[in-house]
Length: 292
Figure 1 (cartoon, helix red, strand yellow):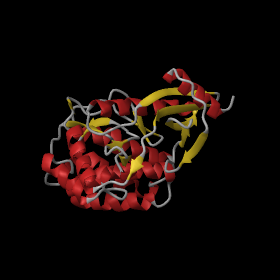
Figure 2 (tube, rainbow, N blue to C red):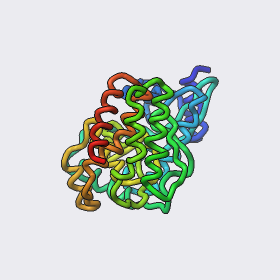
Figure 3 (cartoon, one colour):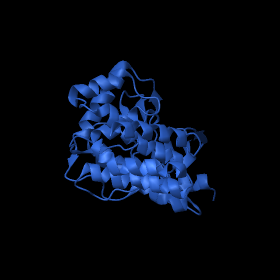
Figure 4 (cartoon, helix red, strand yellow):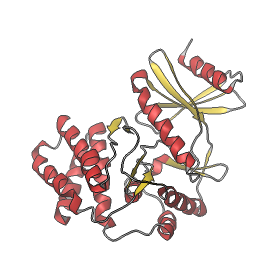
């Protein structure tokens, strides 16, 4: 049995309907997993594939998708199953056809995000550690957002960068920022349900007129951390931000906090991909230290 045949067998098992695939298309865009669309001429499925030792990434993703779905804001792809075959694990989800977003759809996405952020928790973190890309994301619950972000986000990524051989000549600068980052988080947010990795590539409009988000790195945190991430790689149109602001107005100091929160993602990209992200991380740190 081939891997594709095993995937088809899983679909048959969990849908209780015979599935004999006729066509498989590779879907580009991801850097961590291989993704395919598999169909039998009647129904299509979206499948993410990786090595079996990375199965936990899919398990945590599945939990995140279900948590977002419970908010009844964004449409998330429904998970059929998480299964494995030989050295591979795979996550099978419904295939959602895409279409171009209208101004109205983009504005609705801003409304959806604000409403999703209205889902609150007493503490900051999540029920388990999960993943940001393929990097472990530490989610131990803390009552202080500043402490959570300092320890579970910045310090963790910085220590990993040092271990990976980066930032050694600017180590003291980063240690100074981590020690004083609470000065930059100069507000007291409530713990909102966050997507955690909400850049424009993890969002699309569906053919049925819904707005969908996927690939979550979910946790409870400052709602601005999600909003900041939407501006990092390409961003959304102004309609999105205007609609969000109508429900969840942006507070003073966001311009600086945005850079602090996005430094976490740049450090993660440095640890995953290296290259130019080291210089970008240093530039962001210089700016943040100047604002302390």
